[in-house]
Length: 334
Ligand SMILES: [Cu+2]
Image (tube, protein in one colour):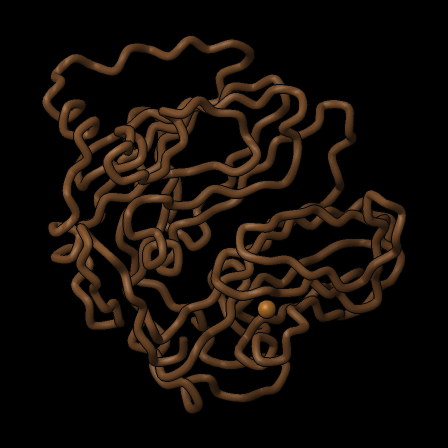
């Protein structure tokens, strides 16, 4: 994809998308699906959803963000200047941002990835979603149980209102988390331009905890994603973990010997990645011992171990081009 363009079809016509494309202008060419138009005309408030179990409620807004995948401008391990090799890395991106009840105030900055949705089996996850971006976007969860209207996905003519949330509009998603949904998951935009907006930053972690399982002492949520020159005016790709590229910019993870450590990992671009961590290994559900695990787009998993090896370690993707373009970080064990 480096420097290339993406082709997208809107109403039978193909459009080339590159880093110069005005997505807001492009979005105007997308016909508003009939059920969405009908809901827009409906002035009644959405009826309160029937909630069983504990209601876990979030207010999340999709908004523009100025984002620098390499804020320190250097690869700390190699001692090299990324500014010299890649040039300017600050980009205009998209993000999900956590707000307080009724969107009264933001609870933190807009970040890539978005906020952690943290629920337990038996909970009902309610996400009040507001879009301020110039294109229709959504929130679509993996792992949770949801009815068809709560899918948060664009389906052309058959799109429900939650699958096409236009600028300035809100939608309340209700997702159930019954027994059988436990796991390390994620959410992302699944609107009509998802092949661009996900790359621009619209994704985040979701965990549905098993109440019978003890909480780890340390846990980290790690998104493997990339900033591509197709969507940003970058000289070359930046392969990122949690929106940052190169050691010292990517999350520096910490633990102490004896800790029960969990890492929740997911992929959110067009590539296959591997999760590799030096000096450590874990047991897969089938009993195999692994220290390098392959995962594809939207795959997610958890690895867990009792920490037994102090030192400054690396964790990284073992696809060498990804490693060389930033997909690496420190794991420091005291
Ligand atoms: Cu990779």
